[in-house]
Image 1 (tube, rainbow, N blue to C red):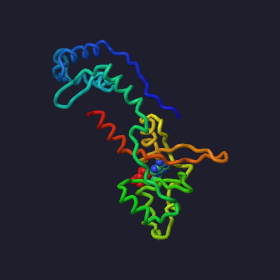
Image 2: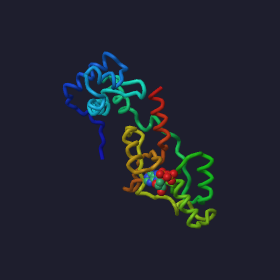
Image 3: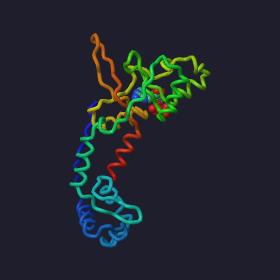
Image 4: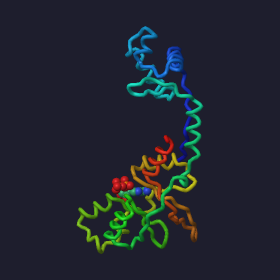
Length: 217
Ligand code: ADP
């Protein structure tokens, strides 16, 4: 599926245009003060103000008031987000072989301080194992020292992956849509007409949160 950040054109009502002018000239300005200028109550302006904040034209700071958001800043920010690729924010992959015991894979998860591990078979991605998979194995009474991790992992072809050159917002969308914490970053290798995936890295919610924090700094 192909996702695009869309530019949405909205038609502003006259009163909304006036509100923008008032905010531009008096910012920060509270909703009470704007309402006073129109000679109406605050609740009469509520829907106009929420249209303007939801569309990103105004920003509401609690206890301070409304600010006008310069649209060139907004576009610059969108352009900036669109060029960031998975490769720019990735982490090293944490990888174990499918034959390793569940016990040793749990030890790796603790030592590496991650929430999921890529499992490989003959050097290529075979699956992913996460905290919940280990908990399921534990409550199911699995013999952790003897059961190979490959028996409890989520396996290919059900693994959601990303690629170094994929835009970061598309990878972030995959994480949200599939309700998972991380994606293996892979390179496709075709051997004897069959696709295999070499694991190059790991993209987790933490990488994206760090990017978000860096952007605000
Ligand atoms: P946690 O177990 O900490 O909630 P996740 O939400 O990432 O971690 O994992 C939930 C389930 O999704 C687990 O069964 C796990 O094996 C699986 N899973 C994790 N990452 C992926 C992925 N990239 N693709 C497909 N399945 C995944």
